[in-house]
Image 1 (spheres, rainbow, N blue to C red):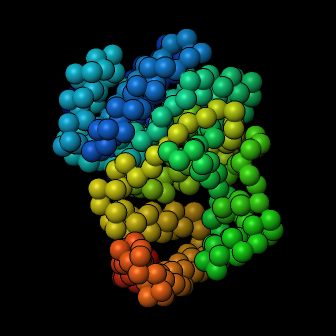
Image 2: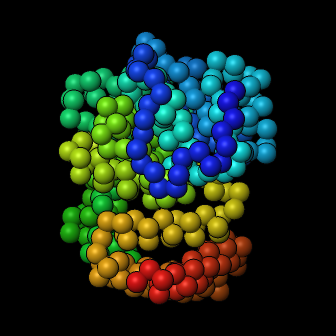
Length: 336
């Protein structure tokens, strides 16, 4: 077990200097914050992983208070545990784990993910076949067995406008309206994509040395868009590999403070736009986001009046939309 001070690694640092030369096939890195039950399932699933000759597991705990570190120490002594002294966020904690890793491939896996049997084997095999690939991800299913949409296009003014007005859902087969959520694709075929969800990545160590680590300026959310864009900008392809499969339960950490994490999502989106887009495009994004939240708040309010049976659900959604809208207006002037 290793303790890490909260000041390790400056905010926004992207450079990764690995402490060791690669000596293993795979390093699995799991960032955990108060997600003990999910973490237990994740670690048990990794014990069933097949087809990988040499593998290590690194858990980076962000100062959990629910007994997660003690679970790892007591039940999984083969797992390397790093205990941060504070919640450093997703990006920074993953960078800490990557720095001490020994694998030629790095698997960044959320604590609320179960890795199915040969998932890593299939991803590694595909990456070995194509040295241009810098990142790959599996098909992701929810706990209900339904596939989750784990691939997206890079956000732009047009596809965000389509998302705002729900044109992608109204016309799911129309490619013109589906540049972001890709609803015109069933995610049942292998293809190169812009963005893979950050719940499960397999990345090539050599590519991380070139691209850099996750941007630690993103506390939670947004780092997936940013990292995938940087991989693509560096000439490293990002591949969706559907024969590899994993289960993602979702919300293991964000459920501890749901409204706060929706605001964090909004904050991360704005950070991404300021980093990768012009001021004019960012202004358009802010306007579209404001319209999106207003429409959703109005729609949920109407649903609240019409559906008494789900009153608490719509009350929360109205509260969430209004909280995000308030934050957005307060940040808009500073952003521009």
